[in-house]
Image (cartoon, rainbow, N blue to C red):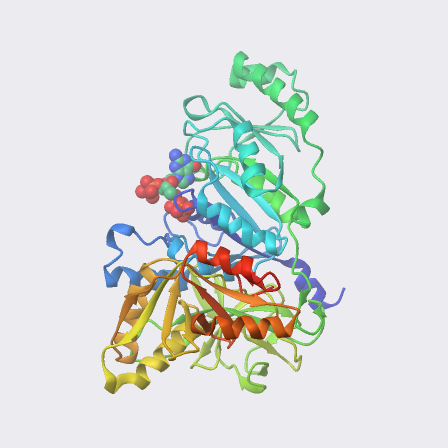
Length: 527
Ligand code: G4P
């Protein structure tokens, strides 16, 4: 193994996904504590935007600040360099989460044992499945009266369409929660509620008939555990690492993040089985991480909090070779080289200047408007990395310029905010009307506020009756032209100039699909 390969084999880059309130922030904090990256609980700030304060601009700005600080948290654990990528909790910023998921090699999914699989989790899982991202599940809050563990496993299989394999099993729940049994190492972990202590002590019980089990958890729960383990070992085949790596099977852990319980078991398994940085496809070929030449792509852009300086931080996932600060790299979209003398690495909550970085790492590059989400940077490679899809937004509003003197500023501001991925802009072919599409209303407020503050432009948003924006394709060029001609009034262009059909209602969409069977409609930009 050469130096580059050694560095790659040490990297694990992953994200934690969860429905808000399931315990993502708490789990993140515990992982950082294990890694020694922080030394007390309470240090990690939630990136949640409280709905009660959602129209409070200071709150949003504050949140934006927090989310830069905690966007990437690097820590070391057992000689591995782990990069944890944070995903926005608020569903109005779901697009940001989808994009972050393109930069990770695996995910940990947190599920609240009281609430089970929630809506946001289902959506996030869909994104993971598009890329066969390996998933580990952590079922949280076992100290609360939750749902039956078998029901939870069935629900994961059913709603998330992935097979499960429990690796720990809970003994009791809520008031009677006694701990978990590690099915793999055959260890019993006794639960002692504590927000401070980091690990529970394991009691080895190689043979479940051991009387020690009864002594620790009582006769009823001991018998129940024996029954459960027999059933689980009978029903679920042994975990096959390859199946996990291909995203087919998710290992499942039970625990209580706030009590640091069951977290270490998950982390230890994670470092054993989770994938190191993998090869990735550009439009031209597959690039291996151990290729000497540097390549990477921008998956997130964050504007400076100071409105006087319109500079931004672009987050780049390194895919191959070694990144070196001060080198000039090709921005494939512009076919132009740029020198990046200001590069930042993220360690827990600190940012520090980084001189070199390896595949799996994320570096923050200082940018003055040359970079855009999805951009590929390279030492010469000409292909663009695939895989940052846009999804059809849910809510559409037309942009109304309120200050004709500031039209230029408005256009520039809109373009730059769209490059950052704040929302999606569609421009109608007819009349060049501009429509902004978002996942949640909060995004409109952010756009309006930022256009005013950072660009001095005023706009309003007029509601539009639109159901979906969908991309379309066909093998039959003639039919495609016919379709565009007949629906010209409803055709717009997305940020990349791709044509999009703006459907007004669901039933109309259905009708159009029936009337144009040769046209394929897609609800995301990559097909
Ligand atoms: P999120 O980032 O996924 O949105 O969730 P977060 O970690 O902020 O956790 C949401 C709430 O759940 C928090 O309570 C947190 O303390 C609690 N929590 C996390 N893990 C556990 C657990 O294992 N057991 C129990 N019982 N609760 C847990 P909160 O009241 O919203 O906030 P706080 O005031 O406690 O910080």
